[in-house]
Image (cartoon, rainbow, N blue to C red; front, side, top):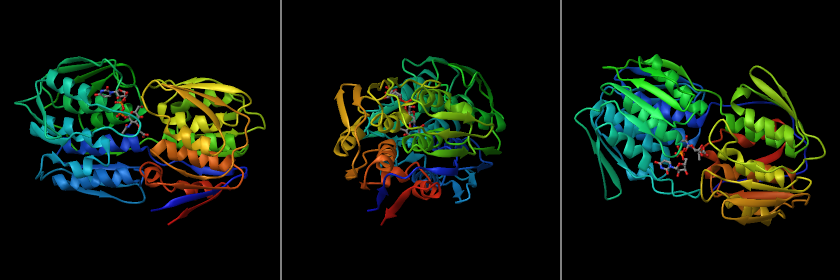
Length: 417
Ligand code: EPZ
């Protein structure tokens, strides 16, 4: 099993280009199920979750191709299996995103329940409640959702909790439903907007994406399209913290700074110098990092997917910061590994108090999930000596060639196979 070796103490300098967003590409690939015509996607990140989704679509009968240069073509003309099997879904929860499109176009679907993961229980009750409001029948048995409908109807759906893939799944179900659907308290993430742009290019009628009230008028059928995946704001944020924690000077290119406002504001607050550009931004870290409290919330607030990376930075703060995680109930697994590197972190429920100003020392640590693995790399960059990170298969799920990109801006980092 691969490991990542990091030797700390190097200031990062240079330019790094950001890949496409995993969390935008996954729903876009699922949306290809909505039409028999060819869907072309650009700027797809070549990461493991994308390959798992391709395998799932191929299993269903989609002619699915994804190349390392980010191009993808998908043709769902001859669907053979209206099923997402446990073997594929268990490795990637986002497989649930095929449920809405399958029900909308084929009126039935069998999808394995994703189950929980390291960061929380992550139920899908809001997805199923929304589909049932649209007239579907969703039975859960033997670890599968068996869903069917005589034809989805438009409905008014209010989410009790903001859910990103819940919003995306119901948006994809509603585009072929009979009548109008209103999604209230919907997720406003840029990935939701990117999906709405794609669905409109396919002929869908959608308004309000990017706000918490989305209106969808169903149409009879959808056509193929060419669609570009937005840059990965979480990858960009991860590199921004790499620059700050190493006191470096890095230009983060091929991304949309507007998708990172809350993150960049927080980095300015703790003392990093941020210079915004059109398609990128520059981060200059300075000697002092101020300890500042943080609370995660749905977009446009500070994202939970940047919390672990921020915690690594706060281990180098000049005082104590309190980090409050409001989205997932168990997203502090990285803290225990940071403590192994010498950090002083005390956790209670969904709060962690990080006492900064302590030198981190390199150690053997293990990743528990995608963003936790990124935070351990960041800590390794700031630590004295060598850090070996185990279970990097978590990292490969969502970061494309991160160690090569980090080495390209001066990090002493490599993969040990
Ligand atoms: C998406 O997950 C992202 N994944 C996650 O990124 C991200 O952490 C999360 O949104 C929050 O921003 C993808 O887009 C593929 P949610 P999702 O439904 O949609 C509760 C990464 O690192 N909830 O918005 O699964 C849920 O338990 C990943 O790239 C219900 O209770 O998250 C959580 O507490 C990790 N019932 C909250 O809502 C439901 O039916 C938000 O979860 C659905 C969600």
